[in-house]
Image 1 (cartoon, rainbow, N blue to C red):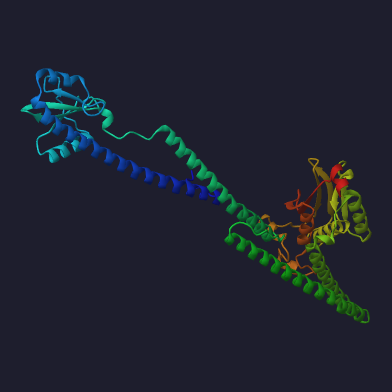
Image 2 (tube, rainbow, N blue to C red):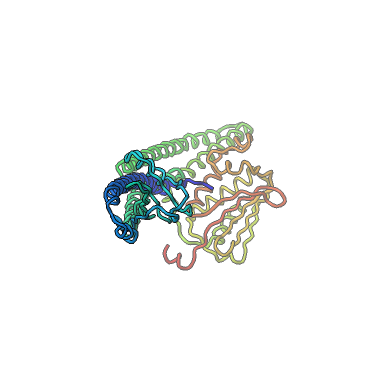
Length: 445
């Protein structure tokens, strides 16, 4: 069990409570110690005064007056006077107040002072014995005078109310510190996840300064990213012109074997350029405006086009999937399917099997599988990253490791998910899950 909470708000409130509690305890300790010392000094002085007074008065009293003293209170309410007789307790008190009072009385009076107690706790009175006119008398100190009176109940309620008010004020100020930090943390997390997000500077000056610096960093990252995309886009576009001239020169070559080899190299270069352009376009969501569409019909048309090119692609559509609509750009869907089929044919074994189905009525699931060696489970997460190369042989053949990264980026823009799994019977199965657009959502798009 953790004694210290993990959140900043809880720790700050705990710190405020601890500081207030320690301050209150120290204050009350000093207050009660001083009050206890003052009370003891008052009782001591009163007792000494009464002893001196009685030592002067008692020797001159007659028998009737002496007997009358036993029925009245002496000096203050609760103090009584008794002569020495068989009813005097024989037990000597041992609690702190009695020992301290005995020591101080003997020191200040300069004579032997005896203290007696019933020995049944502190509820009975404390008998203080002194000599007056050659006789021993006993001044009885009532139990309530052993210690000062406690604080009134109303004062305790006021203290509790003040503590609650302090906690409310502390909570208000802590909230003003923690809420801006939480929003800044969300913005930092969003920026780290790839969607740069600014935050409104608020809260204490240090938190505002941190938010302003975060916003500055986001702006700088956006500018650097825009410069990078512009540079790469320009570079890939510039490569298309030399590639076109290279193809013209290849067509004029007489050696068929040499021409075929160079043509394959040119195709690989063009495929790499195309993947780079697709990856750069996928970074900008505006390139793929989402519209609700029947995915089954669109994929069926794309599969027919693949078959016309002589590619071994098989497609099956579930009954519910045939009528399911998904909010996705047609060009984005085409790029998803083209990249998955290209990867399956280039790195796997034909035929490529495509299946559409509905999962729990909420998601449309597109499955694309091949019959190749697949990808080891420990390397699948890496395979979805940009420029990932799973095996050395994949560095050839016009592959630059962007196919699955393009698919994941487009699918993530549609609030979908991409999963790599082992296909039953061998091969790799790429699962693309996209949220189905409901009737209400269709009206909003």
